[in-house]
Length: 413
Image 1 (cartoon, rainbow, N blue to C red):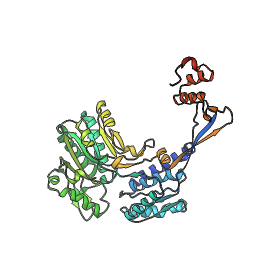
Image 2: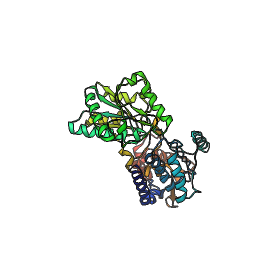
Image 3: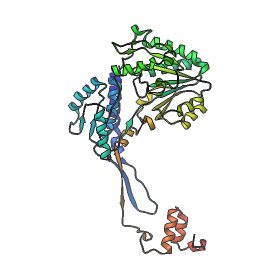
Image 4: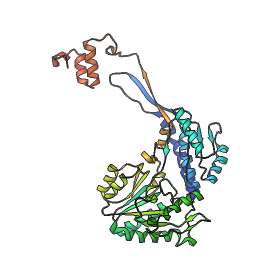
C-alpha cells in the first residue's frame, strides 16, 4: 500500500504538469498607462538546478515521493538536476539509482550517492554559483486539540492516531510531534488513543502490525535515549516497549513529560507522542510561539475565534484544520517550511515557480513618444513627471490641455 500511494502521488504530479505546463510558461499581458506596449512573462529555467535532497525517510512511500515530486517540477521548468538520495534509506536510494537512468535522460538528470558530507559540498557549490536553494527541514509539528462532541472527538482521535503512527511510525517531516490539550480532557484523550492504537496497530510488541520499524540502529538508539531520561520514563502512560533486534518501538504515549527534556526540545521523528496539558486551549498559541517555527500546525477545533488566532498569531509552514497529513497530497497547496522548518516551497505549480525564473518581456511601438521623459528639462516636463509619479491622471489631462495653471497658482508644489 505505501508503494501504491507513492505511485499515485507521482503519477498525479506528472499528469498535472503534462496538462498545465504550457500555460505556466506563458503568462498574461501587463499594461502601462499612456504608453503603447505589448508585454508578457516567459518562464525559463533558473540554470543548472542542483537538487540536493538529504532526506531521512525510511520507506519507499515518503522517501521517493519527496524526491520525485520536486524533480518533476524542476524538469518541467527546463533544468538539469542532480539528485542526492538519503544514505539513511539505502534500499530506496538503490531503487532510484537503478530506475531513473532507464527512463530519463542521464545527461540532464544525475544521481549521486554519498554521505551528508557530499550534501555539504553540493550546498557550497550552489552558494559559489549563486544557485537558489529550497530547504525542507521538518521540525516539531504540534496538534492543538479543542473540545468536541463525542462523535467528533472520536473522529479527531482516529485522525491523530493514524497521522502519528501510520506515517512510517512517526518518521515523517510532517508527522505529529506532540499534542496540546486542556487538562480536563487529558484522561479521556489518553484512553481513546490507547483504544485506537490497539485497534490499528496491535495490543503489544508481539502483535504489532501496520507499523514500520525504525530506519536504522542510529535512529533507534536516539529515540530510545529520549525514554531513558527519568522524568520522561515516569510520564509514559502507554507503550514504551522496544525490540533492538527488529528495531521496533511500540507506539508510546507520554503525559506531561518535562518541557526541558530532549523529547520536548528535539524533533522526535519516531513513534513517541508527548501530550502536554494546558489550563486553557488558547495557551497553545504562546506555547507554540515560544519554540522554533514548525513545518505544520494541526488544529482540531470548531471555534472560529481560535482558528483565526492560530492563523494570525502563529508562524508555520502550513496549517491544517481538523485533519492530519493530507495537505501533502493537495496539488493546489505549496509544501514548504518557514524559519527553522525550512524555506522555499514546491508542489504542483509551486514547484514550477521555484525551479524557474519568470522573465518579463516588453515590446514598444514607435507611436506616441512622451517627450517629457527626455531632457532638456523645463517646468512643463517637471510638472508632468511629478503628476505621473502621483498617478494624478486628471492633473496630467489638465496639464496637456494647458489648463493646469488655472488650478495650481503656487508652482512650488
